[in-house]
Picture 1 (cartoon, one colour):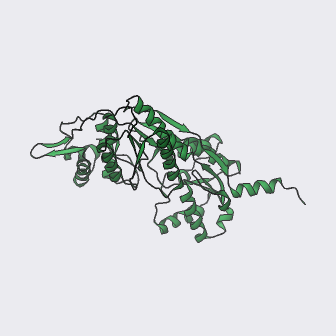
Picture 2 (cartoon, helix red, strand yellow; picture 1 turned 90 degrees about the horizontal axis):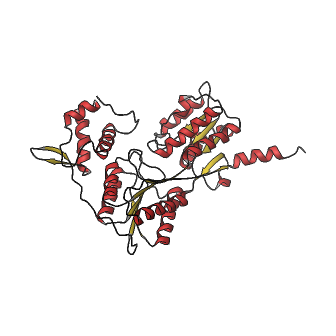
Picture 3 (cartoon, one colour; picture 1 turned 120 degrees about the vertical axis):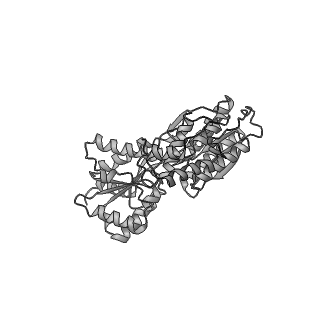
Amino acid sequence: MTTTPADGGLPLYRQIVRELHASIVRNEYIAGKPFISQREVCERFGVSTATAIRALNELVNQGILVRHRGRGTFVAEQPVRTPAPADRSGATIACILFGLSSGHVSQMLSGVEAGCKELGYRLLLSNSEASSEQELAAMRRAREDNVSGVVLFPVEGSTNALAIAELRQSGIPLVMVDRYLPEIATGAVTADNYSIGYRVTEKLIDRGHRRIAALWDEIYCTSVRDRLTGHQQALTAHELPMDAELTVLRSYQKMPTPARRRYLSELLASAEPPTALLCAHGYVLATIIQDLLDLDPELLERLDLASMDNVAPFDIVPFITAAAVLPSKEMGHAAVGLLEEAIKAHEGTRAHHVVLPADIRDGARASRALAQLSTPDR
């Protein structure tokens, strides 16, 4: 019996949908052939009938499976598309993303827009609203609109690997930006997330911290997993103990406010509390600052805060020690460049990854501390 991974807050039926998607992408199930039954799903994943039905219904709703009365459930046939010509005249790039209120995402979009303008592509923008279902609908519209390529900022825990594979198989190249889906080979442009996790952690270690708690928002994406790995490797390289309670991959940002503050209060009241908090990004940092102010304003003087994502402008964030500055606009621009290469070569299956360096900056608190150290006694 195969069991689903322990993916925390991701609903069990969505975990099953993701695994079955991956199986179809690997051609373990062939279009037009019978799919596994409800009973087989129960046996394979060790779940209830209700969960198996919900997972299969989701695959049907997404057009991945099709039901034939009296015959059963089959993998849906997918139409074949002729690759678009290399001529860019009137060609369109679809950009599917979410979180436009974020500076990081808006800068990625700015880079995509600049790349399209330089290369003569029209830009079709879709907001997935952080929903796998909306993301799938946007990819289907892109395919129906016969776009020349797709830039995708995939939602957390996306179950659309099969739809992505179908786009590429039909001759539409796709490049992911910021993160990628490890279960499918596609082009991708990311920041050096491992280095971000390592170097921001090292900034805190250099300031004397030995117990650093990492606090997250999204947890089901490669950018976060890579940052966690970098953080853990920095601890190991400096021969610091790795406390599971401090490095656990748990979404602090998505906890209800009372539960979040209770968790933080217990963490800081433990026998060996952290002396620094490493935040996934600026939104988590802002939440932490508010939570600390509500618990005890003096905590902000006792703790160092750092962020693995953009926090700007630095001069109005007095509590921050260090933060990464992502190459957001460069990522969007490079994604269009990868699409251009694939379109010119008529390649719907190019899987080149581009990793861009990020800048790590000292924040206001670190800058003040350094200034104090360098000021001679009067």
